[in-house]
Length: 88
Image (cartoon, rainbow, N blue to C red; front, side, top):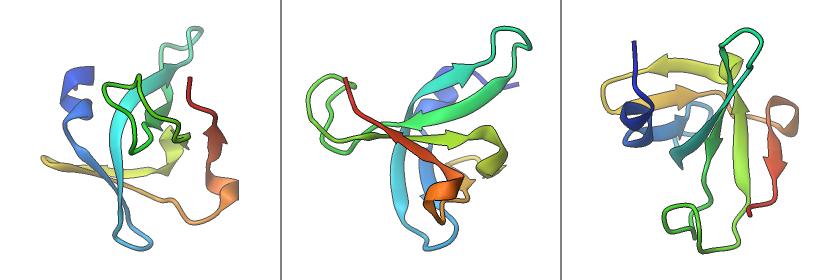
């Protein structure tokens, strides 16, 4: 079992190019099943999720390949794998 706070300190890395996407800012949970549907990566210009105008990246749970001790490896190749949302 993991705590949300443990997810937030891990770097999220794209396995297709090795780039760091950022850190998990939030998670989306299906209230009917209680399962995590997606993770939200905050934009790089944000401070504690408030200041900045960068878009958030939402990565579906199925695209998480491995959760390691220090990093979370995700598949992030094309726009069919994710959706972007405007930051609030």
